Image 1 (tube, rainbow, N blue to C red):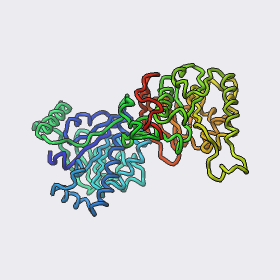
Image 2 (cartoon, rainbow, N blue to C red):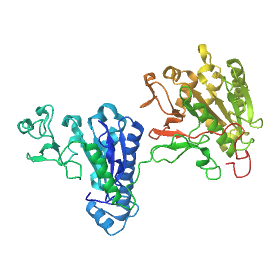
Image 3 (cartoon, rainbow, N blue to C red):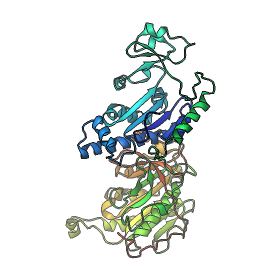
Image 4 (tube, helix red, strand yellow):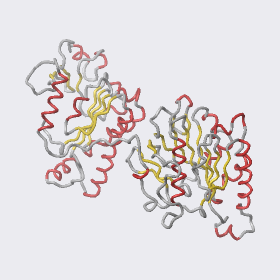
Amino acid sequence: MTHTPREVGIYGLDLVGGGLAALSGLPHVGGIAGRADRERAARTVEEVRGMLAAREELFREHGIDSVERLRELRAEGRLPELSSTEIVLVIDGFGALRDDFVEIEDAVTDLLKRGGGYGIHVVASMLRWNDVRIATQATFGTRVELRLNDPGDSSIDRKLAETLAPDEPGRVLTDGKLFAQTALPRIDSLASTSELGPAVEQAAMVIGASWSGDGAQRVRVLPARIPTASLPSPTAEPNRVPIGLDQTALAPVLLDLFKRDQHLMILGDSECGKTNLLRLVTQGLMERYSDEEIVFAVMDPRRGLRKLVPEEYRGGYAHNTRLCGALAAGIATELEKRMPDDTQDALMSGTWYSGPRIVILIDDYDILTTAGQQPLAPFLPFIPSAQDIGLHFVVTRRVAGASRALYEPFMMTLRESGTTAVVMTGDRQEGQLFPGVYAAAQPPGRGTLVRRGEPTRLIQTALAAEDGDRTDTPGTPGNHA
């Protein structure tokens, strides 16, 4: 009521009982995330952290040395790139971060430690002071205590805390050891807690109606469905294949299979979108490279990829373990010719082979390796040199049993070569599949991107076109690297 949305933007994590939901109608509020919506909660914290990063850069560019100077510049109408001068993150139920939202606890702690100097503030409620880690407690500059279940938990004064009676709601003890009475969040002049929820909603409507300008920056979340047409085209990205959007910046996720990523491993249980991602990568490569630059070998035990790769791009197709083993052995013979020897001039020039890059598409790897069979064993000697001989793998597998399967010779060799991975829906009880990464129930197309040298990111993969429905013509000028 005392500040405009240009002066303060508010974001909330409602981790207790839904009491903050009524504030969503305020123009100052960019988003309120409830306990059940874990993704929106993580996205809310990520959005505020993004604001912190932007302000750090802004302070550096403009030589701003304090929040006071920031306020002065904003009052002069400068720094229009900021939607709000001050940002407040409200957390109802701070203790839930330690118990149920461990993935965002470190991010909130970072905001507590660094945000104050850039105009980003945290207001939190908790059952007791010990819900905050000892190292973090000092980051709260102001404390007030309502009645505690155990007065012994008071961080201000135990004896004074004992005097707070249950029949005096709203009575608080300040960190100056003074008593105070908090006001009710209503503007209808009624000093009563009856129908408080509707009163808060009405207050939000009145405040919202009195503001005609832009509201606070909204929290953006990953969409449930992403059409490939919304991602960068082959003209914009001639080398890298866009596979979706990431949660951190809602920016396109680009797969550089021929340089940085080398291979792609996709783990997910039924109906999670792992085969769709394999299709998306394949179509993206064919839109960017001609059939003289790339060739595919398809290992497809469920026969769902029969029409994916046109004849001109297809170097081989196999649909059972025996045929896959024979196809792998045939490709291994070609790969052997690409391996250099000490007398080759190509070894000095760095060019070990001629011919197209070979991309092995393996859908449902777990079916191929049933009963301990290893049809992909012929590839093992060549994976360490894959980058130099133009060999790449895109592999999908169920999460069920993956904690053991990742130590099979083929999968382990891929992992050691620095493969990029996407972990989609699965049972958390499978354990840690990659450092700090566990499978979990997720919407279709959602997964965790694991790439060497980068923090893990939640992504939403795009929808691949149906076989034969691609709009770009493979191999046309401008579509190649």
